[in-house]
Length: 290
Picture 1: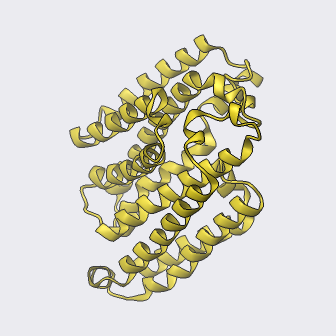
Picture 2: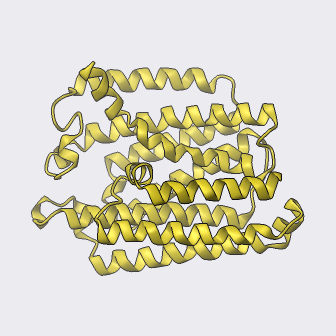
């Protein structure tokens, strides 16, 4: 049973919450209660969950030496020795086979998006994670692919402002992750190569830019003429309050409590963040579908 727990930790079940981004097109296209669209979105969620699990296994396999030097990551299954390299490879093969089965019933365009996600993250694990700025941009691009996949699988288009908001949210979380990771190492010799190219000042500036980008792009989306016409109301503007609180709360947890390296853990463990997310979702559903 302990071994199974280590396997589940390896594929990071908790981090699958990030794949909920595939449901953004479903909700904002007013197709949430349309059976075919809902089924398609659930399939997309499962596909991205398996793809991201595969990426996590590959990343931990190649990053094992750096993880062993990290105060938190050294406890990961491969880094701690609780899961061997051969076991990790076997799990990766199983995940790839399951993903192939899930993708069998999807369209070609969605398959290309999943393939792009895996390939980009594979090269990220091998080398691209060592390139300053580009490393966080690739993480953000992964979230954009999730939203794009969610739109493609139900054949809808998204507002440009909503796409921008997604990019800034992803960039924000990626930079916070780097900031916390940067502060975790007291000895520069133990830092990953890319962290040496950053500084606390640079990370703070990028964080401020991305945080502002989230609020501005979402605000412009909520008051755009297209949005008002689509939903028949301008009330979506009031949900900006939840977005602002969510951003500021995330900043508080990262700066004051040194959390944010694991976005999924933070979101799932902080009660105010959970309550804010629930209120935001309920408000959006009421405005769009009520």
